[in-house]
Image (cartoon, rainbow, N blue to C red; front, side):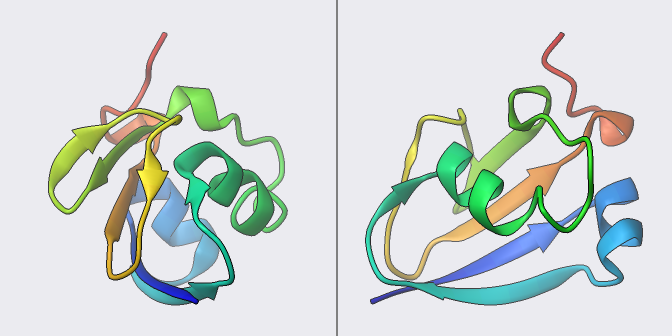
Length: 84
């Protein structure tokens, strides 16, 4: 089991109604897979490739692997997170 803290910023924080939450998952996963399985279903029309991510305060791409006790920050395009 892997426990992670997720931080949400700007419009994503507003859509979800919270600035952070904790997740426990069964297996290691990538940022993109985690996003698609746990976030995109809650806010329609999100493309994980357009966001910026930081794992434990270091910038990461969508293919980065998440580990136990990681903190993942998700920054949407409106807060400077666009990858266009």
